[in-house]
Image (cartoon, rainbow, N blue to C red; front, side, top):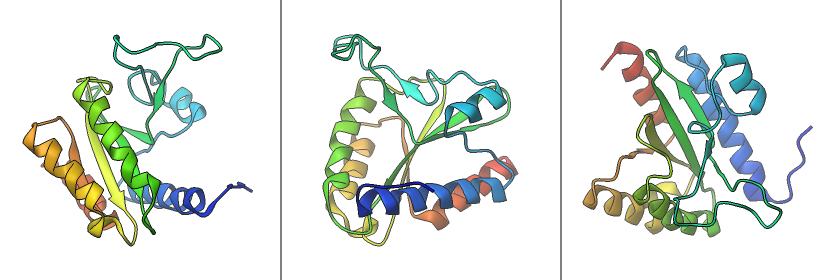
Length: 166
């Protein structure tokens, strides 16, 4: 049994389970943990793990490589794939504000150019969250390489488009 410290972690965990289930239902795989990447024989760096820009500190206080961890990776044919960042909001809170740090990571190329990047906003309050709307506006204005998806249903539609080759 997974133990969570607060409600946000619990609802986020449920959203991750739903995203994984939908991905599997359309015949795709969502890689999430080390074991998933090992079984798929896919490198975690550049898919799950992402280094900070070279101008930012590269190590933690203990000397380890600093990294950002994506919420998932969907491998596609011909060595393609989609990096998934999931932002789930059932209530308004700090998750909403984190997207502004994420814009900076996208601007600086943290996610690289090899794979597509999808930000999936889910939860009861996601569509009326100003921070998420502003994130989308800024990404479009700057033509940042990210697809923004609103809700579980739209996520499923986008995955089905891939399956059809659209």
